[in-house]
Image (tube, rainbow, N blue to C red):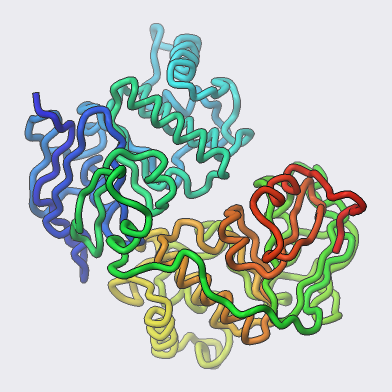
Length: 510
């Protein structure tokens, strides 16, 4: 029997205008976590979509457990013991955990589905692998981290012993990420093999045994993780040294641009999400909002951008109230918004990249004239932003959904920063980006600050908040617990604040 459970030899895949995979070789051993590392658009997901049967290679061969195979569709992959957890979950929200896991492979008792047997198997798998999910819970009622576990259980239920995890921590909190790494290690102890698609170097060092680095569709190298370090991997990935901390001069705060006064708002269930939140952001500074996910960050961004109604308090932009105004009216006042979910709020996926670059300005000159769009002006504008922000796309006419997640994100960021706003709201701006792109985006945020703009950075990544922000406001249960100087704090202090621990003599606020 071959020592490799997966061998991909000379895999080439072409799309119009681009070679996504160029004679790639990949070998994965039984019982290992093998990381596939690369920049956004490097070809990682394409390669794994070939292994899972979603794409067919133009050239090359695939061997599973020593046998040459033709993986013509995902059903063939499942039959070969290959399961894939996609970056964007494929779950039916009104269904229960069990219903989602067995969908398409339901056990039957006569003419009816045997949900009792299905639930018992789901519970048994959950306990065996330490996944700890409630088989009866509805998907819409569980956390993102739990949904990730449901996706893993779907593959295990179908008998997968080769698991492909595509950017599995892109939407997880740090705690959920640690739990997922423990689950992965538990799976390989049980004899599973895992291919981990990621660009997060910390996770590779913590979880993987071997790493293969891909750059622009070609393999740069394969190395044991114990013989490398984050600096070397970053250089392999982007082809140059990467600065993990961005250099910046001290902020020179000017007048108050955004003032949030005792704002209250409800979440989608009608439960209070913001409970008298107050803070201010000045011109020429970056205020970071730090907190554990689910403490009102999303609702805060929505009330600031007109996507959610305020039930109390007021929001002032340069002294003028903007709360409960329509989103376009707020944008016209000079507020730019990088949303946390690029698919739901940032892009129209079936529109071209060129069209997406003018989503909020298409009705203005030079992009329209007498009610008609001017295609040449839109294309010229999009090509300029694509060059400036290194958005990798075959052309401006390529649909947004055809780009990698990281390049979709860079397109959104390019559009919003280009508006020359007075206030830039950046919600999880580097989610799904590689280290080279993160470095670039951090520099652009600091450039915006240095040009006198007010920047509000909302991030679940403490490293990002500490690196980029000038002041840090910690949110807990819809209130600001404290505001601290980024240069005078650390992860320990922020962690205590994020758990709701207030310093003596402080009751929150400014």
